[in-house]
Image (tube, rainbow, N blue to C red):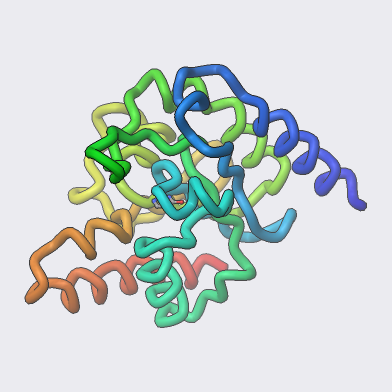
Length: 196
Ligand code: URA
């Protein structure tokens, strides 16, 4: 195993028992990032959803299916990308048997930051894409506005960072606007593909 792979594996093992914030208690498990240890591109989402919490893998639910389709249309293979989240436990509220997604608070993002920083250090991607506001604000600051800046690469600590929307925003939008929203997401991913 390479030194990088070993570093990622020990980070993953440490994160599995993380109690840095209270989200670990009701969640099933820590959902750490996945992908090649030296990926050129890292995608940073918000937090695992219901499916991801059960499976222990990022972006394997409905938002993951939108992401997979958009990546394919942009000419990026999912298995060449390291996919992770700003927060590694599912935050939810119970509604009977249902677990309803709740946006993580700044304190959750902050508590989880060492894991994300560790992943960035180890994978050392040339390009990072943030998916949605939580991930963008985590890396670019609380005042950052994704809608105004999406699809525009910027220098970030010696890497290229491209903010774009979260794939779940496409699912949440009006059905008649979905094709357009998906095409705009694909266009952002095409910009990212051009940085390869
Ligand atoms: N939404 C995210 O931000 N991350 C996931 O892993 C799944 C859904």
